[in-house]
Image (tube, rainbow, N blue to C red; front, side, top):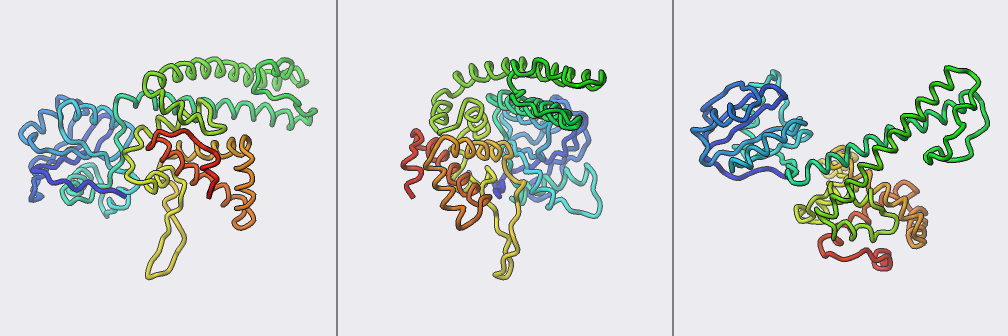
Length: 347
């Protein structure tokens, strides 16, 4: 956990919502200078903080509509801090809770150096990253539709579908297998939606591949040197990491990727681990997929997992490989070196 601990003459805490924002400005002594509820309009916000702009820092808890405020602060050259929502949830425990109280607490957290920091993704690549995440959402809906067709086939005890429905050419005649007209119509609907998603996904993937060749082609092709990592996994890794230099150490990076467990300990006694939901879920998914594909492509990876499995079991062995791959990606991007299988499995 990292905290914002820089000193300023004025601190502005904002409890942000889609239509309203409760703003609290305090000075270095903690005295409230202004405490007001506003509409989420940039001109209203700038008018409110105008007397305190010199040396002001603005803090807001991470929620889906923070983009415009971060961009406004950057444009106006105002220091902006994005608070980590999961860490702040524990800090915000109180008997009474409302927007007015929360905005004051955020301001005081900034003043006291106790504001847990989340990464405010820069505007330049943010939209592309969000498009990539939307592509993942659509891909999961496609998988659900494919699964529904399969489960419907089993539901009516029909012969197994021997060909993969993920390929368009294998979907012909699937709906005709069902005798009841309503069931046939349902399967046709699923297959039609799958076809539409295929068209949109192909278009989005072509767009993303063209975009990354402008944004960062070198690291894109560098990540693709990992056996099994294709264009989609490379895109996810590249846009979710953004800049590897923002991680001070390899430990911080693999923790951000949810590849390690954090021990809970008190009075010298271990009480399990926690923090499994703190970090980047998209990177966790990407590394989980990457090790499965690495195992398919690399005999060395298969031998490594088999060796670890004897001691730790299958699940732990895969976790060890994922953390090992996370470390390799960190140093690949740091040193700008391609993936080397022999070096990777040397130890």
